[in-house]
Image (cartoon, rainbow over all chains, first blue to last red; front, side, top):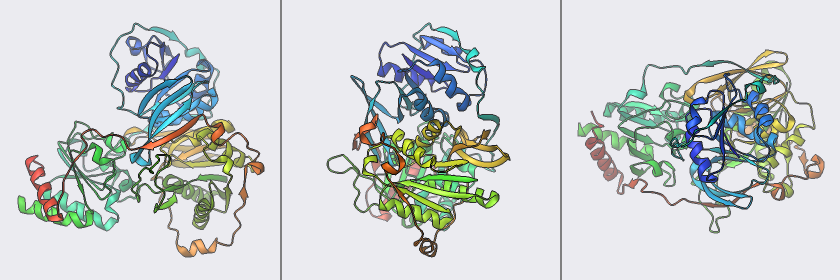
Length: 303
Length: 261
C-alpha cells in the first residue's frame, strides 16, 4: 500500500509519483481536509479538521499506517517537518527531495536526487524492505487526472489520544513592503554572486536604467541587504514577470519555484555550472562587478 | 540552558564549481573551499545568543576528520564553550539515520535542554535533526527562524513556511530545532579568535567511546551509488564574446523583449 499525506495542492503530483513507482498499487490519501481527493485515490483517510501540526500527525500516522508501507510527502516545509522523524518511528527508510525514479528491483528503490544546491545529481539506492518515507520535489510529476471513485474512511477518532509536545499558536503573514514585485513585468534580480553589499549599487543602477523593479534571492535577504518583500522563491514571493534577469543567482529549486509564467529568463553568473543555466533562456558567464557597469552604460545608450 | 549544536564541514557550494570525479563515485575534491555548513553557523550563533541571555553552555559537535576539528574550533572561537569531535572510519558511508544515531549517543553523554542543527547541509536532505529528535523521543521543529522563551519548560518558536509566512508554535523542552538561515546575523570570527581557542582541548570520540555499532555503510538503508551531471534539455543559449560584445547582445535581447523602458 502506498500512502500520500495530502497537505496541499501537491497531492495530485504525489498521486502520479505513486502510480509511477507502483503502477496499479492501492493508493491512499491521508489528510486533515482531503475529501475532494476521492477521484484520485482508492481510499481517502480523513483525520478531521485541525492545523496540520507535524508533532501531532507523526504519532497519529505511526499508529494508523501499517508497517512496511510506502509514504509519499511533498518536499516542502511540511514534509521536512514531518518526514524524517516519521521514517524513524515507522522503522522505514527515508529518501528526501526525490527528483526522479529509476524503478524498483526486488527491495531496492532507485531514485535520483540533487546535491550541492543542484550543481550535481546522484543516483540513490534505498532498501525499502521495511517501507520508506519519500519526499518528492514539487513540479517533478504532473498532476494526476481523476480516475478513481475512492472510499472515504473517517480516522478522526485517532487524534483524541495524542497530546503533542509542540502546539500550533498562530500564522503570521509575511510583511508587505513598499514594492510589490509580484505585479512587475520586468524584474532585475540579484543573488549571492554580487559578492559585497557595496556592489549592490551596480544592480540598482541597472534596474533604474531599465526602469525595472529590483528583486533578489534568499541570501541577499538573509544578509539584510534588501527587504524580505523583494525576495523571489518558495520562501518569498511568487512572481510572474515577462522578463527575469537573474544576476549572480545560482538557481536553487527554491528560488526557481517562485518564478512562474515561463518568462524570458536571462542569467548572468560567473560559475558556468550554476543550475540557473539549466532553467534560463539565455546565459552569460561573466563577473558581475566587471559586466554590470558596461551593461548599464549600454542600456542607457539604447533608450 | 545546556545547548548542543551539530555542525558539519562542507564544500561551500557558493564558492565552488562542484563537478563529478572521473569514476563518478565522488565530487572532485581538489581545490575545494571548505567551510562550516551555512545553516549550522546560524544555529551556533543562535545558541550563543540564547546562552548570553539565559546563561548555560554551548557545546558544538561534529562528525568528521581533522578538517572537521577546524570547524569545531572556528565555532568555539565564535563563542561556543566547548567542542567535541567524532571520528571513526566505521561511521563513513552512514545514511541520515546512521548520522542521527551517532549524534544521539553524543547527546546522551550530557544533559541537554536543547539541540540545534542546521535546516539542511550540502546534500540538501534536511533529515538529521528530525531523525535525532525521533530517536531521542523529543519534540522537533524544522526551519526555525525565531526562538524565545515562553516559560520554564516551553519555548515559543517561529517556523518559516511557504511564502515567507511564519508558523508560531510552543514547544516543550528538551527539544530539537533545525535552524533556517537569516534567523540572526552570525558574528565574525577573526584569526585572533581562532588563535585564542587553539590550545583548548577538543575531545575526540570514536564508536567504542560512544557505544554505537549500527551506523556506517553496512547499516545504511540509503546509499548514493554515484554522482552524475544530468543530460540537460535545451538549457540556456550561452552568449559568447568580449564584455562589450556580451553587453551589446544582452541589450539587444532586452530591448527586443520590451524590457528597457
